[in-house]
Amino acid sequence: MSKNAGGRQFEIEEVEELLRERTIGPLQGFRSKMGRPFAAILRIVRDEEIKNFKLEFDFGQNDEDGEEGEGVDFTGQTPLGPCPKCNAGVYEMGLAYVCENQVAKPKTCDFRSGRIILQQEILPEQMAKLLDDGKTDLLPGFISQRTRRPFKAFLVRGKDGKISFEFEERKAKPAAKGKAAAKEDEGAAAPAADEAAAPAAKKPAAKKAATKTAAKKAPAKKAAAKKTAAA
Image (cartoon, rainbow, N blue to C red; front, side):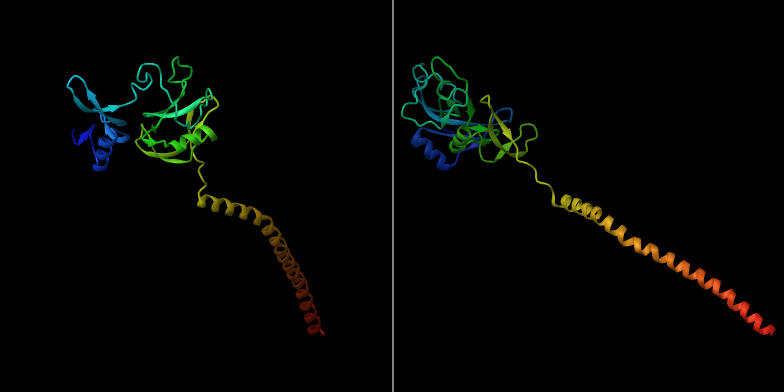
């Protein structure tokens, strides 16, 4: 057994669990030959050709057939919640959460959801929330396939039973709120400013009237002075 598989190095604790349980995962951090990340379950299985044991990736390729090709029996297991399409039980199986009718013979439902979505592991308790309440908690570890950037989102259950993303609402920036409040204050202050300016506009008119009165009195005084001198 190599220390590396799929471009990923095993930790000592992982090797101990693998040897003890003969299976481990799903584990993330593997890389395909094209350099794309993927997750997988690892199992120690017996190879009849070489009469020995070997390590192999398990992507759930044989889960639907069961051990004898008669479907999967979930007897003794507790379902995580009701299937959003047919209301049967949903169970954890390999790299997916599946409706029991999706892996039955004959197959009567197609509900299946990955345990890892865009490199974010969907824990059983989150899947139970999704099935029962229609929405998970806000999950922060999704990685966009297009931009390779992390993002956070809710998983939500649609009326048609399909699962999709829902993003949290963006909060308005404090600076933007401050500007809006300032504009409102300016608008509210405008009428008051106009009212305050009105009396001030009357005062210059009063000064002008006083100036005219003074101008009329001045010639009258000069005329009186002239009369006195003539006498």
